[in-house]
Image 1 (cartoon, rainbow, N blue to C red):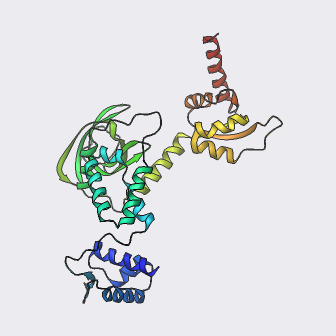
Image 2: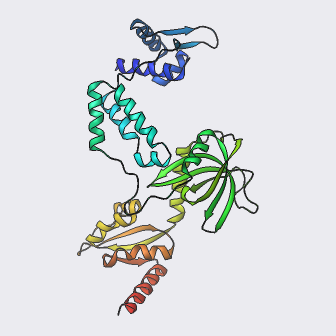
Image 3: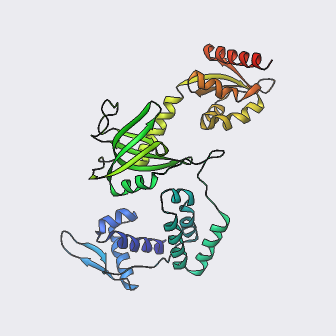
Amino acid sequence: MRADRLLSLLLLLQNRGRTTAPELAAELEVSVRTVYRDIDALGASGVPVLADRGPAGGYRLADGYRTRLTGLTDAQADSLFLAGVPGPAQDLGLGADLAAAQLKLQAALPGRLAGRARQIQERFHLDATAWFRDADPVPHLARIAQAVWDQRVLHAHYRRWRGEVRRELHPLGLVLKGGIWYLVARVGAGAGAGDADGEDTVRTYRVARFLAVDTAEDGFERPAGFELAAYWQESTDRLDAALRGQTAQLRLSPRGRQLLPMQFGAAGTRALADAGPPDADGWVRISLAVESETIAVGDILRLGTEAEVLGPPALRRALAETVTALAGRYA
C-alpha cells in the first residue's frame, strides 16, 4: 500500500510541479505528517525532491527529473491499451498519434507488462458504433475538436429539423454516445437573428449535421463551474423524462417479457421490475413509460401478439385502428 502511495506522490509532483504538503495530503487522503515521511522516503531512495520555503513554497522535483513508466500494475497497464478506441480516434484525426503513442508506451513498459499489452491488443477490440447502423459521416469533427481544445469560437452552419441556421458557438466539449458524436456548446452573441436560443445558452448539437464550420481568431471564457459529464447526464435525464412523459398499461406474455427490454431498453427493464404476479396463463401487467401516442403505437407493435394495451383508452383505440388498417391492407 505504501509503495503505491509513494508512486502516486512521485507522479503528482512530476505532473503538477510545486505542491504544498496539505495539497498532497488532501489528494492522497492521508495526514500531512504522512506526507512528510513519504517525502523523506522518496529522498532516501534517490528521488531529487526539493523543498521551497516561504508563502509560495512547497515540494517539487529537481528540474529535468522524470520517472519512467515503472510501477504500473497489470490492470493499470491493460487499461491504457483499452482506453484508446481506434474508430473515434480516427474520427478526431488522432489515429496515427494513437498508434504511435501505444508503440512508445509498449517500448517503455517492462517486458512482462509489454507482453500483456500485446495480448490485450490481440484479444480485445472496442467498437463504439451501435448495431445495424453505419457511423455518422463527420467531416468537420477534427476542426471542431481543435476548436474545443484551443477554446476558439466557431462560426457554424447547422441543419436542424426545422431548417438551417447559422450560429456563433463557444465549443465546450465533445461526447461520443452510441457511435454518434455530439458537440456541447454555448450559443454566442453571434447567433442568428430570430433564433430561439439566447446568448449563454448551452445546447447539444449532432456533429454530423454541421454543414460548415469556420474557426474564428477569437477565444472565449468557459462558463464558471461547467462540467461536461454533469451537463451530459442532466441533459440525457431531461430528454428521457420529456420523451417518455406518458404511461401505458400493458399485459405481456412470457415471450413478451423477454422482448420488452430488447425493444424498450432501460424503460422496459424498470417496468418489468415492478410487474405484478403472472396470471394463470403466465401473462403479467406492467406500467410502461412511453413517448407520444404515435411513437408508442409503433413501438408497441414491435411486440406483436405478445402484448395487449389496456390503457389509456386513447392509446388502445389508436393501436386498434392501426391493426385494423393493416389487416385491411393485407386481406
